[in-house]
Image 1 (spheres, protein in one colour):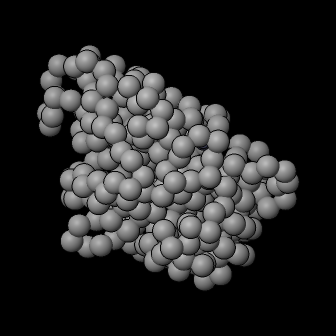
Image 2 (cartoon, helix red, strand yellow; image 1 turned 180 degrees about the vertical axis):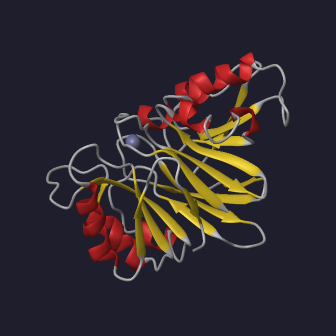
Length: 247
Ligand SMILES: [Zn+2]
Ligand SMILES: [Zn+2]
């Protein structure tokens, strides 16, 4: 299993780089996890969007779903679809209006998930953890059939203790690291130190810092995370960089 970063900023695109979106590939299966601003333009550089098998959304904040509409138009406007007629888009049913928008005639069909569900998408088994965020948001634990390679994505969240067992021994942990350690006040995202500590506590194989801030020096962010992560290998998300889930 491998994951390619399609966009990695939190909040808004900048510097020619979009917001949260990741392409997960396993045995020819293509899953797009989140579809933020700029996702379609970036995805087109690595994969024909018609080759997607499914999309899954962590929550309905715009920086995670902004390009769903244009992805639906892409499918609608291409009559020839090599794999399937309709693109399944998985999202929480907690927001009925947003969930309803996932279905678009001749393009996509919304598929609801609830926190306790276990999804089987192609070779991937996906379970969820509700996060601490202003709207319902769900972390995902994605296990590849046959190899048991495991990817855990925190979605957007403040640090919560439940993340430690949820991320336990994941080969790759992807954390919402929107803040440097000196962040004060209300936090709806994790700091670099919290991401690193989580990776250490959960004994993961490697840590990818993502949902990154547009400000400051990202090498400082990485250093703050690495200090807390101990021996866990830490990487910054990078545009269209592909990570093997298992090192
Ligand atoms: Zn976000
Ligand atoms: Zn959010």
